[in-house]
Amino acid sequence: MDQLAFNLQEDAEIEAAAKAQKAAPADNTDQPAPAKRTHNRAPLPDHLERQEEILSPGDACGDCGGALKQLGEDVTEELEYVPGHFIVKRIVRPRMACTCCEAFAQAELPSRPITRGRPGPGLLAHVLVGKYCDHLPLYRQSVIYSRDKVDLHRSTLTDWVGRSTALLEPLADHIGKLVRAGPALFADDTPVKMQIKGKTGKAQTARLWSYVRDERPWHGQAPPCAWYQFSVDRKGEHPSTHLAGYQGVVHADGFTGFNGLFGDGKASEQACMVHVRRKFVEVYDREGSAIAEEAIKRIAALYAVEKEARYKPVEERVAVRQEEAKPVFEELEAWLQLQLPKISGKSILAEAIRYALGRMPKARAYLDNGQLELDNNICERSIRPVTLGRKNYLFMGSKGGGDAAAIAYTLIETARMNNVDPEAWLRWVLARIADHKMNRLEDLMPWKWAAE
Image (cartoon, rainbow, N blue to C red; front, side, top):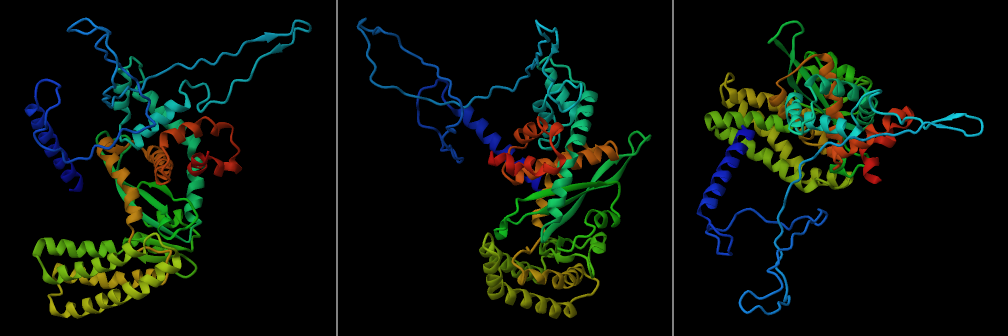
């Protein structure tokens, strides 16, 4: 629904711009605009190349024929786009022979991402980012490339994606180790369709699991990273396998499949208050319940404190929460317990209250630990690229295709979390990884690339 609302807003703005264009004067003379635009016109970025076109009236006056002299100039800047284009990189290795002893000499062919393959690292990075970041299925990319008279069949592109993600898998595994090394992480999953082998048109519901480490809200030193894993179903054995041996804190929703992570000698659970709030929002939208409305307001008070505590050191976050959030949290919990006997036990409001009372004891730990968050929103944001992508490619073709997607999402989302252009970084990585030592994978991480 959020995406639909966003699209409708875009359409309304497009309609307004079209009407303004029709109402504009036919010539290019400067005249007062019929109505002031509501969007901001920031200066064009300085780093962009400038191509100048000088429009001179000539050297002679059009009225008397006298010589013209320049008094100044008016400059109008126009933002233009030059489409990306293919090039053929020719690697020439002269075959040489010694004039004295006739010994043969030739330079070694540099390692390439795909042995005996034709794509360069830049093209592979472009295809990967097109599919998994910009949500362009490979058949659409094939059509786009054909407009440049370059025939890259979809089957060729699928081969490249499979081989390049296999080459990049050690990097994704390294990111997974970094995620699991943190004192706290965020876990979530989302459904994706997977085609059933041998049954055209039939699909089953598979899952992509997301695990995120993000210490930015409390000034942690570790760079943020996201690790994805694919499974053919939603059984609880998958997160238990993914996070085997992890003993930190896991932010999660109430999905029972995560229960195997928690217990003595295992991880601790930090419940998500966004899911608690969501239950009351659903009740209020359906019934207009005053109790649900009051619960929403009380939860909003907790988030007002979080806004103040965000991006502060751990000790300051705890102090703010103890002073301002703890009384609100405890009063909310006590107030909900008082409301439950007043309403029908079979109502959806009672169900929302019971859910809240069941989750709040598992959310309380954030009050005493500045490394924890009140919700799992950090991980839910990491799921959004997947939800956008599945609207375009509809389903995974196989288990191997899902694993490849998990690798690509891991690398691309981690780069984005570190404010690194994923295509530029992957181009750099793919040019090096074939010869790179596996015990120095840290040197290829996006935060290392940004430092260079």
